Length: 64
Image (cartoon, rainbow, N blue to C red; front, top):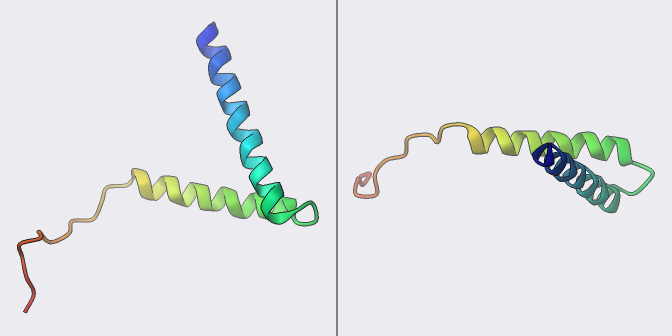
């Protein structure tokens, strides 16, 4: 039960921290649009971080 409670508090902390950052960046006049934009940025960041990295040439291979 304490694991669920701890997870709940962690999620709540992340949500309110995210909301504070959006409020600080966009202010009260554009909070909803700012929230959507920042949520999209976070989603794109997570998708890029989780996806497989593209194969890059080895450092020894030189192009001429």
